[in-house]
Image (cartoon, rainbow, N blue to C red):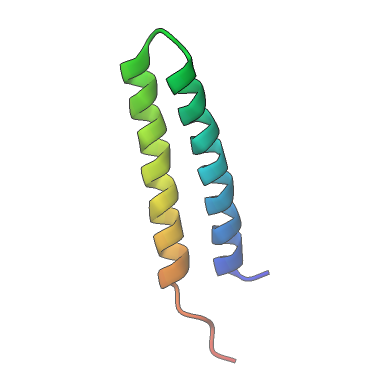
Length: 61
């Protein structure tokens, strides 16, 4: 497995986790501001991991 593939798997896990957390935040009542900020931070982290995985050049044989 290459490093780019591992980054893509990590990105997929982050996106799924962030989407589930964001859904829970929207449906839950209570501390909306703090949890919404954390959900947005997870989405930004997933976007940066995706950008790093896409930007990484393939290894030369």
